[in-house]
Structure formats: C-alpha cells, structure tokens
Length: 165
Image 1 (tube, helix red, strand yellow):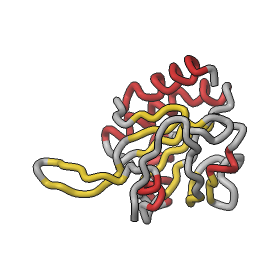
Image 2 (tube, rainbow, N blue to C red):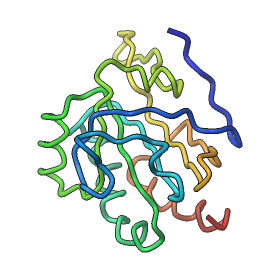
Image 3 (cartoon, rainbow, N blue to C red):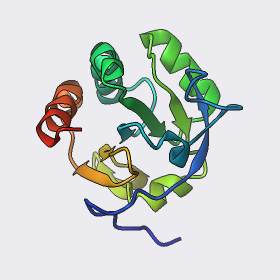
Image 4 (cartoon, helix red, strand yellow):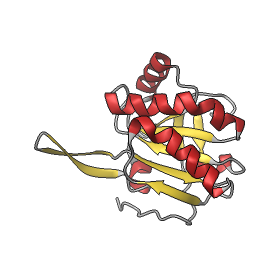
C-alpha cells in the first residue's frame, strides 16, 4: 500500500471509519470525513489508547473541547486500536469527542502517518503522532508532524485563531 504524502492546501483524503462518541458526529457507528464539511476539523492520529503521551494529548483536547465546540470545531482522534479499547479509554478520561478505529491502518497509510518507529533499539511499524487541521471546504490548512502531547490542543487553537478559521 502506498503511503500518501499529504501537503498543506491540498484536499484532505476522504474516509469512513468505525467510531465511538457523539451521535451528532458519529452516524450508524461511523464517521465519514466528507460529512463534516462546513466544520473546521482537527484530525489527530495517536499511537495507542491509554499510554502516557496519548492520554496527555487526549486530555489536552478534552480540556480545550468547550472552546473548540464554541467555535464549531470537530475533534477526531484516530488510532489502530479497536472500538472496545477506544470506549474504555474515552470512559476513563471522559473524552467528549469521537475516537475512530483504524484497525487495518488504511487511513493511517492514506495520511502517511504509518511509519517505522524505534523504541529501545527495536524497530517496528506504528502510528506516528501527527495532526491535520482541515477547513470547512475540506482542505488541509496545517499539519503538525511532531506534537508535544500535553500542549497540543492550545497550539491547535492558536493556529485556528491565526488562520481566521
């Protein structure tokens, strides 16, 4: 499978994934990105539910969610974990936004975030922590290829403000 290289100011590739979360965004247990046109969308990919960095990032988005919702911004978290894992993670941390299950990693490949990683000298493939800011027309306006988990939601909000989205 070819990994795409997505660039800023290009249309965000559409996808549909199984999801848990809010009924106004999750339809029939799924989220389709193109159905979110007319919303600024924060699509953040993260390696694994309930790990320290991923929990810090999810909680930063949780804590900023009221500000995001006030502006009509949709936050979507994506990992290769299954729906049961997502539900447990969302319940544990009170996450108010949808978590999408990319269990076959097709969307991670599509967005170019499925990458070789190295931990303690061991190489393996996994989801890289990256975020895509998508405007109301479905165009990628900003990509964060490296994310500081705990501060990321504020960084996203600041960028949305500076871009006037």
